[in-house]
Length: 158
Image (cartoon, rainbow, N blue to C red; front, side, top):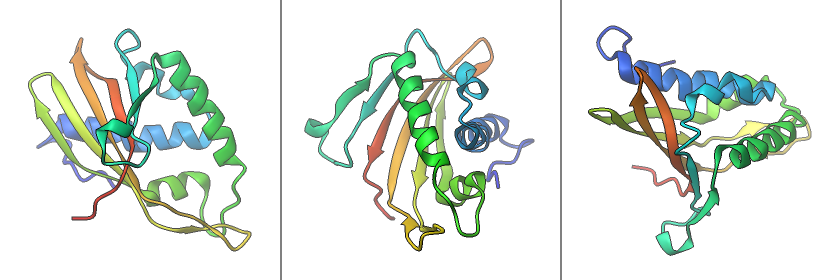
C-alpha cells in the first residue's frame, strides 16, 4: 500500500507509485517499456555499492540507460524463472519492498527503497537478502525522472 496520501502529499504518492507499484509490475512482466519514461536518459547513471557501506567499494556500474536496461531485462528473465510457493512474482516483489522515506527539495528528490524479507520458493528454499537503493530524481516538464541511483547498499535496520 502506498503510504503517501494522494491529496495531502501528491508528489511522494506519485514517486512511490512509479518506484514501487509500476516498477514491480514491469519487472515481474519483464517489460522495461512500462518504466522507460521514468528515467532521464541523457543524465542517467547507476552506482553499484556492492553491499558495502564503504564508498571506496562503489563503482559506476551503469554509465547509460541502455546498459542499465539490458541488465534489468536479464535480471527480470532470471527472476521469472523462480517458482514461488504462495506468491505470484508481483506479490513476491511487493512483499519485499518498502519505500516510506522520500526527501523532496524543490525539483529534486531522494527516495529510499528497501528490500528485505524471506519469500518461500517451491523447492523449499527462500528468496531472501536485504539491501537498499537510493534513487535520485529530478522533476522536469512536470514529471519526476530518475537521474541515477546508489544500488546494492547494505540495509541498516533502524
